[in-house]
Length: 303
Image 1: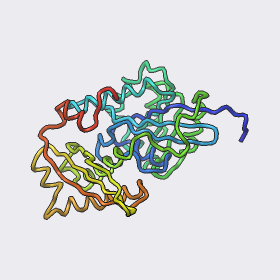
Image 2: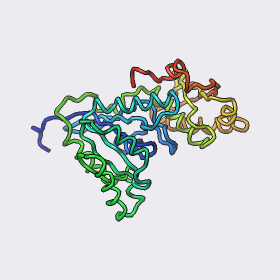
Image 3: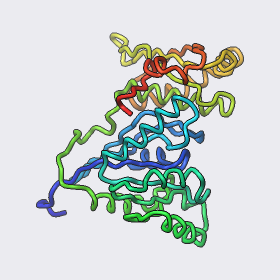
Image 4: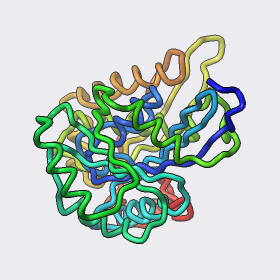
């Protein structure tokens, strides 16, 4: 590598309809579980930024919530957030799912991308799940709709072609400073990541029964004196008492399972033993109350 090369840095926004693999991609590139992974739409909520620092560049990824037609106030926040993210960045990665082909959700996003001056890469994900012959016609369809700076087929899960994509992104980045320390992978405080990890487990284990009407509030994070243990107290907020029953489970079995799985991830994140205490609380219809959304960490000015 040439030491005289100028340092490049910039912001990259990842957009795409729900479940195209944005979080998997981010986790593959950054190597830490920072965007929550679940096969339900709308699971990545706040702007999680992943930072990839290399010898001569720094890429800051903004993982935007899925752009989709909003159904309630929380949805509004999410779409606003996604569209705002496009104004500030150096490269946009429009990620699509090779398996599902072009859908109405993609059309909606393409509509939003028209007139955006930022270079847009079409990133076709999940190529490990389709036959190569199916890929070209799909790419052609997208090419007809928008003028992409580059088209890169990848598999975020398997890691195929990720390096090619990163090299192409780097070419587009302006010269700039190193914004974050080299060992920092996300600008979200640990409190936020911990709440997302708990939320991921709750969503994953309850499947269809408790949809997105879950928020997680971290009540306290304290180091236990004299021990290498951190005490985390958190409350899972649901909209209806029937959902509270599902989250708690038979004799507390579901809550215990959520807690055990979340604790393992939190221990990896913090690098110490964790004592996790979970509570469940009903707050009727929290997704439509702006003041409650603010309490649960959705700040309008961040969106």
